Structure formats: C-alpha cells, structure tokens
Length: 491
Ligand code: PMP
Image (cartoon, rainbow, N blue to C red):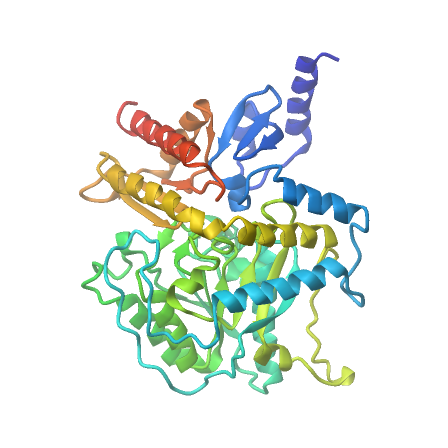
C-alpha cells in the first residue's frame, strides 16, 4: 500500500472507530483529521509530514518537549526491569523513590514554617499590591506537619476524586459525621469523573450531569473581568472572599473541604485570581475548620513560574492534587498528597475499617514513576524555573500589547499559562455567541500557519512546553496575534 493510501486508511479508521473526547463527532466526521505520528521538542508532526508548534503542550501536560532524551532513557531503562506491578499489597522501586522526591520538593517549595504574611509579587498579570493578610487564628486549626503522604492514581480527575474521598472519610474517622459537603468555585474545573464534576462549575461541561451530582456550595469565581458581584478590582477589596466566608460561616458544620485551583482557574477560561485571594481562602479554611484541597493538576510543575502555584502566597493546603506535567507529559500518572494529620486519621485496627478504600489498577505504575523521576531531575539539572523568567516576561509583554486589539477584552496569565479573552464589543464586554465559534476559528487559522492551539470558548489558550525556546515562543505569539486579527477584524 502506498503511503498516501495508508494515510487515507488511517483517516477512515479514525472516523470509523474513535470517539474523541470533548468533540462533536458529527463535525469531526466532516473534517480531515490531523493524525500525529511523531514529535520532537515543541513540535508535533502529522502523517503527511506537516509540523506544528505544540502551543498547548499536548493538553497542558508536556513540559520538556517531545522525545526528551533523559525521560526516554529512564522509561527504556525501567522497561528492562518491569513495566507494571500493583501497589495493592506490594510496592515498587520507582514509586517509592518518586514519593520521597515529591515530598522533598513540596516541602522545599512550601516550607511548613511559612507564614501567610508575605504575598509575593506573582508572575501574574496583576500589577497591584496584594491584600493585607487576614487575621490568623480561630477554631479548627490542624496539626499540620506539611504534605508528606503520597497516594498515587493515574490522571487529574482521579487525583481530585481521591482528595474528595480522603477529606470526606477523614472527618468520619475524627468522629465528625456531619461534614459531608464540599465548597468549590464557579468556573472551577477539576476533571470529568462524577465527583470531580460535582465540584466543577463550568456550566457548558457540567450542567448536563446535574441530577447525578452530589451537593456542593458554590462560591463566586474570583473573575475580575466579569465579576459575579458587579465589583471592580482593586476597589472591591476582594469582596469575593467575604462571600466565601459567608458560606463557611453559615455551613462550616457540614463542610468537609474547599477545593480550589490555586491562582488560575484554567479550563474555566484562564481566570487569574487577584493577589491575596488564595492566602485569604487558606486563612478562612483554617478559621472554620475546613480542609483545603489545592488542585495543582494544571498549575503544578513550573507552569506558573514556580514549582507550585501555592508558593506564590505561601499557602500549604491540607491536600494537594498533582498530575499532567508530573511525567513531563509522557505517561498517565497522578498523586494526591496529604498531611500527616489526615493520614494518621486512617490508622487503626483492621476490624475498624478505617482503611482508605480506594485504588486503581495502574496506581504507582513503575514506567510512569520512572518518567516522573527523570522529569524532576531535569528541573534541578537544567535550572528550569530560572530559565522561565525571561519567557514569562516575553509572554506578559505580548499580552499587554495585545490588549489594544479591537476584540481583545482581557488578557491574563500565571507564568506560562495564558488566556486572551475575545469579545464582540470591548466597551460593553459583550461576548461572541457560542455558535460563532470565534475561538475555534482563530485556532483553525493558527493551525493553517503551523501552530496547534485549542481554545476554551472565546478564550485563546497559550500554554507551550516550558522548554520552548524564546524564538519559538515569539513565533507562536506572532501566529496567534495574526490569527486573532484575521478572524476578528478582517473576516
Ligand atoms: N484539575 C485541573 C485543574 C485540570 O485542569 C484538569 C484537566 N484539565 C483536571 C483536574 C483533570 O485532569 P485529567 O484530564 O487528567 O483527568
């Protein structure tokens, strides 16, 4: 069979057999699918030999580019030993080494001695001074020795699912049976399993499943461009935190935990929270005896310019969820990290049934853990976080310049995670109708110019691998700018 025939066959087979995620398959069937066959550095190649700059890091997971030698080698080396064995009743070497490394990195990044009185000037697009820290104290504080117990699973949704079940069960073991409800934010996205959807707040993804979901309280999203409370930052004095406190105050007896994407609500539209919001939320959780779950699935591993987003506001959550970049975008792996206090509450006699009843077949997969170990090594050896500063500056400068475009309403970033919100009318902030698919049309335009991006509604997402060169970053941004202008101003 000729190469052309083989390629056509692959296209037909894709249409016949694959059901793509988050994709209207009727439309997909009418399009020519892009089928990826190879990758190198920040580029991916399709079966016809066309290369694309991977502008969203293969769905936010890839941090060192494709075919990174050290990660390739680590996986190959592990392959020669064993690919998989279970963590249920057994342990394995890479899983142990990785757990130690993760705890070391977390404790180095989030020292438990940290206080909340220093809110760093984050690599955010918010030049304003942070809020003063809230009063400390109150009842319900935890004996926090830092995050030190690693529970593995295999994707972001399961990391979140685990955190919710852990928090829920923790209170039962403490003899507090009323704490059965979670608080989350509007515009939150924590994954697609039913528990994760229950704490989600993006109507377009989550509404359809309403009858299946468990009860949650939803606090306003700290979305300054479209404030639910009709306020303007910074005059508002972060009143959204007051609303969160109202929920906590009224319902703390039944609230098990509060889950938050620190600094930036990613899939909700790259919504950056104002300085002080995260630290304020932490204070409120401590004050009202509520476990804080930081979902760092998207923000972890350097995305925001620091190893973890929580570092910016010196926040130590009670539970932290990690996935995506953990293996450099190579293998499915996730970790839910809990404090000693939570872990200890599960210790007991066999007959007491205080076991954490959760575990997946691929929990702690050795190949994935080996990839993750190599990835964490690269962070140290290549001083990755230091190298990010200049790239984040380039991105921020570009974003600020592009705020002047006719249909760009807002630009936001946390490190190398950025969103450009397109609007029909800048003065009124009128959005484009969903049916117009403006974000998608920009993405298709960019694709024709050799750049792969995937929007979130009217928000153009920019999230290249951390390893992108300055030159490739500038190239990516130029294509995105041209595509925005061509779609919003010329068509
Ligand atoms: N939490 C956050 C913050 C995410 O951004 C995502 C995925 N975009 C998830 C959880 C779910 O991760 P996964 O797709 O691996 O299940």
